[in-house]
Picture (cartoon, rainbow, N blue to C red):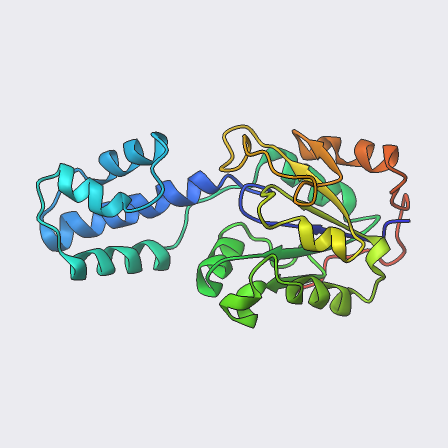
Length: 240
């Protein structure tokens, strides 16, 4: 019987590209106001859509005819990371959090820089929708997934056995291998246009099951003998 559903954040509960575009917009506004440089956002989005994931800022400035400036890049990165994001939950994520809140304890386990991830959680108004939220960055960079530390922290805070936990994520490079080794059931959600939706990996890194929408989660859990109780007494949302 499943007692706890643990969710990843980026591209599991909301489209990560929304954060990226929101960050580009913040940097664009700053460049226009402080440096008199216009047109960054359009180039940055085009680079991102073309598959570029490294040195987007450098490449975009080059396309604008701006000479390389390491200090300027550092300022832009700080603006990007520190901005207040404009992001929204996937519709199926909104449904899943509401649907399972009456039968399971819900938890969030997320990688990334602590302040950035906290701002995402705040923007999505998620802090009162989980029994606990574990930010892997609290353990230092070495505590990011696939480190076992954040998964073990979830078990400690929820007070449940590994066999009673399901982890739902999107990235086979890091989301599932440790959860599987610890005895959790794992589900990969492949939202269209997600950063990792087309990635294939070896069996150890893949999840036990795959879905394209979180609305399929209940069915796939049932098929795999991981049914949640229909109701949970005292099931409430707990502030973190």
